[in-house]
Amino acid sequence: MARIEGRKLDAPPLPTHPALADLLPGGGLRPGASYSIGGSTSLLFALLAQPSQTGSWCGVVGVPGFGAEAAEKAGVDLSHLVLIPEPGPRWLAVTATIADVLPVVAVRPSARAKDADISRLAARMRERGVVLLVQGPWPQTEAMIDVTDARWSGLGDGYGLLEGRELTVTVSSRRFPVPRSSRMLLPAPTGGLVPAQAPVAPVVDLPMRAVG
Image (cartoon, rainbow, N blue to C red; front, side, top):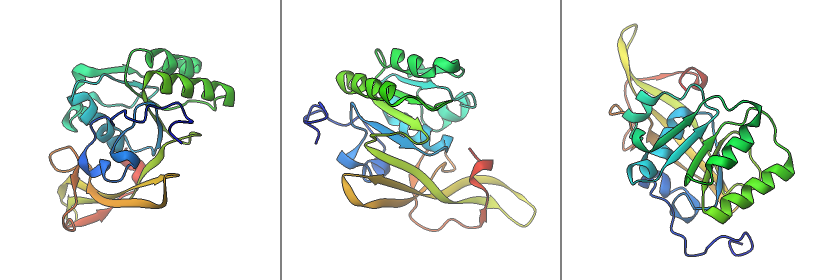
């Protein structure tokens, strides 16, 4: 399948947090592949952290709420990050342009793209070995990554501060028949990602959309 897609079989995956790499097909983010991810900003931070820390430049397109301070606390190296928060209606062209020079590109589409344009972008990504992270549905993806069942710790009965969030990260891919899931702290009290070794207590359920 990789040969048909024009992808180098020996291309190593980009550095990825071990907890996420265990869930992803191929053991990490594969150059030339696209991934559909949920709307969690913390998940996006976690996927960008390791590549940026190891010297890979990352671009983020169309995410005006991307918080640089929160991203840095989550482990993203801001010195290797390019932000284009408002690309306008030509978001796809902007994404394709920065993919010519950056190895990791994340984008939140503002509108549905034509199938032909998506295919051309996918071909460009494969040719240049670029990882594409799309917040939302996207065709021809290597995998879909999302978070569910979020529970915050640190709150009591009318007191306390939010400290960390335990959730389930699930990866679905055509490369394995059953989705893979794991409990993680995202963000952990330190701000980054930590595998959940034990239930977090006390725990309070909060809507995912209120967190980002």
